[in-house]
Length: 153
Image (spheres, rainbow, N blue to C red):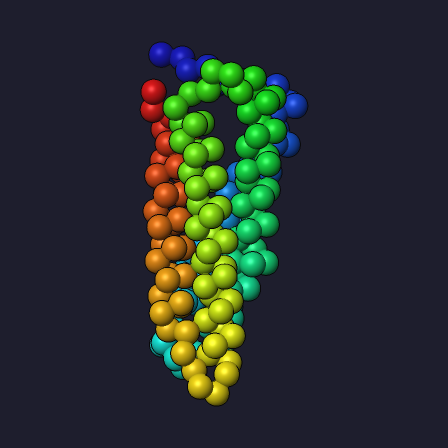
């Protein structure tokens, strides 16, 4: 049996590339953030918490923006704005929802880093909150990656 590959117009290549690049950088940044924040002992490791905060602020949020903007660009190129498949709706819903979680995690990680840098310490609760928020976002993105790869109806 011969399988013919799906051919897409060349105009879709740039938004698709940017979408995939942004999504890979976003997931990679979130794995870094979870590893650095969860691996830091509460109240002792300022550098790890700062790494998690900077990973969220300087990498994850811009990668989220690239992913979301290129997804909208790609959807408009493919004309799926009006009647979109379920996996596209899942992707848009998840990215919009996790944006709120990422902003909240960034604020929590920033406050935790600030409190840890003081002599009094503190910030362990905020650090755990950031880990939970980023962890929930990661789980949601794994589900979206599965949906984008398998395209269930």
